[in-house]
Amino acid sequence: MPYATAPDGVKLSYQVRGSGPPLLLLPGQANSHHWWDPVRADFDGTFQTITFDYRGTGGSDKPDEPYTTRGFAADALAVLDELGIGRAYVYGTSMGGRVAQWLAADRPERVEALVLGCTSPGGAHGIERSNDVRRSLAQPDRQAAERALLELMYTPGWLAAHPGPYHTVGDPDMPAHARRRHLAASAGHDSWDALPAITAPTLVVHGTDDVFNPAANAPVLAERIPGAELRLIEGARHAYFEEFREVASPLVLDFLAGITPRHG
Image (cartoon, rainbow, N blue to C red; front, side):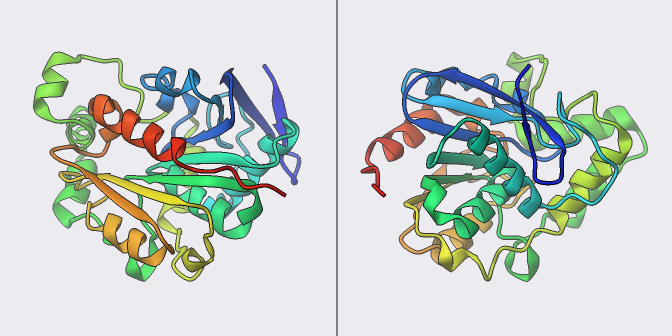
């Protein structure tokens, strides 16, 4: 299993598939690279897809110390550096979209194009989930809370037809301290002041029925990032990229195909 080393010495497990221009895929909070398993093949025919396990997940080190979305972006750069990739296309969903915002804002020369899925700017300008949603996830009955999370990710019809396993509800092997650190990293995200510095062509994608990370965040991001395009997928919940892959994957591929690579 190949590893990259972060600036602070943390070992980061990474995975490479396919061939073509490099496309970095960033998963959601408390998830490993397996988040992308159901749809990764949609991109492998056009791109060399690169994933890595966030610190605290998968095969990466799991230090019990503060994590931040900006720190995860630095970890992503360490992976690209290890692979000798100067500039990559970047597609981040959920917390991965928060990480991608920092990557594009802090290191614009490293990002060819940016896709932000079901994500938020965080902070005072982000639209938070409702108290009802919070309560559903905090139920003392663990099975009920897990079912609530699934229903935030997918429509009832899709769940009935797809009994699992599900790849978007957390890395089951994460230690408790890492789950807490991931939660704090996502909750502490606030990229508002940095978003106007993003120069990469940007697509913002969101499901219209997403209340886990409310769909109202999508136009907020699109208006804040210069020249960003906005696409909403009707009827989709948080895991739009999986349930609605027949719409979402071609949408992203078409956007990326229209980008003229920069030089220098």
